[in-house]
Structures are given as C-alpha cells and as structure tokens.
Image (cartoon, rainbow, N blue to C red; front, side):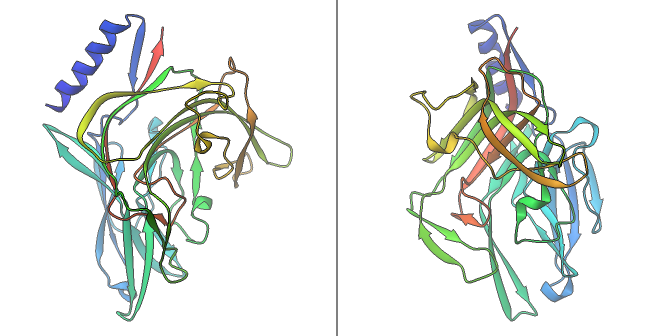
Length: 317
C-alpha cells in the first residue's frame, strides 16, 4: 500500500500542475537501511546496541565508525557511535518501521540512561533527527554535539517545495526536560514540537578559513499537535529571499548560527548566516532536517515521535 500512496500523490501533482516535476531524494523512500551493532563498554553494562543509517542495505558488526556521505547519499542522523574517555557508547533514536508493504522512518525523543558500574546514573535527552550532512564518528565529546557534525551538502538547484508523508505524536504538556548528562535532569517551561525545514544557503570561505553564508531559500514547518493518521504528499513551499515580511513568518524561521561545516583546511567551523540573499540568488549548499523535537541538543519532551516517508523536492520545469 505504501507505493500506492506515493503513486497517487505523484499522479495528483501531475494532474494539478502539468509543468511540475517531483524528484525523490536518494534514499528518501526510506526503504534501504544500514544496520549496525555496537557493543558498549563493560563499565556501562556491555550491552550490544543497534543503530541505523539510511543507505545501501548493509549489516555492520563491531565498533566501527560509519562514514556518512558516500556515493551521493546526503543523509546523516542522530544515531551515533561515541568513544568518550575510552568508553564506547551507542545512542539510538532512529529506526525503520513497517508501513504497508515497505518501511518508513521513525524518530523518537528519548531519555537515554547510562549506568556506570550500576551505581552512577546519567541521563541524556536525545531527539530523533535525520538531516543532510555528515556526523563525524566516533563522537568524542558530548559537551558540544554540533562540533561532531558537518551540516549541509552541495546544492545549486531552486525547488519550489519540499514534499513528504508524515504523522506524529506530540505531548500537550507545557514543560520539557533539560538533560545534558553533566548535571541533574530538570523540568523547565516549554513545548516540544516536531519540525521540518529545508535551508538553501550561499556559502563562501575567507582567507582565515571562516565560512560565511547568506540564506537563499527557506521551507519551514513545525507540528504542534498529534497527527495520528498519515498525511500523504504534504507540501512545504520554498520561499526565496528575505521572508521576514511574509504573514507566515515565525521567529524560528530566521537566520541561524548553530550549524557547523568542514572548511578547506579540514576543520569543523561555524556557519553563520549573516544576511538574506536576493530572491533570484542561486544556492551553493542545502540543509534538510526532519526531527521529532524543535529544541537544541539535550532539551525536549521524551515520548514525542515523528514518522516520515517518501521525501522529495518539487520543481517547476
């Protein structure tokens, strides 16, 4: 049935706008997965954990760093293998889930618990997230998780919309966890929501290796309430240029400074969006992110879930 949903969505798009073209993103049909088995250190229990990655179907056994970005695959994810102070740990919040005759991607917000010698308990809140870019494994520090990630991929096209199937479970509670693992977990005011965005950027590097960026295009949505049934062929329009004057604009859609990327010297460095590009500008890079939580790392509401399938881009030919 899953393929029927996709075909019906594509047929409807063709009938409504004959000049449209829908390009499925590589592995965006969520049918092909890498399964990884990581054995954690004995000091934290020695459990073998299962991690997943979108990519050519494969099974990897053993504590081996996974190399993202191979063979044109744009996807990375929050599942990660870490070695911190000699301790091997696996964090998993992504999983394939059966949908009809195929699979979709499930992303959970989870409170991960680590017990050291069965005595010291550490709690870390992790959002389930898939995104364009590369996680650099093994992760060596949890103090600054973004320092382990190269966000974005080269991209020079100008799509009119992002298209996907989705459903979600979102808690109505007006509080979230702050759980960094460095101190006691704490409840604070807030409401966690699922989020999808595509940011088109024009990047350049200066003589000192600093990466600069302008925002060329923006597709952005947050989901504030539970959606139990699949929404198929959902479109998120891409707006170009400065979008702050649009009626749909929200503060969270604005310019960002939290992403990192690898510069020409091989160093992970901040990518600061400094301004809005002209509406007719051509991007050099894109960041697509689909996540079960809208807060930064270690903040969120455990139990929130987002499912996604059939992710593509729409173009006007």
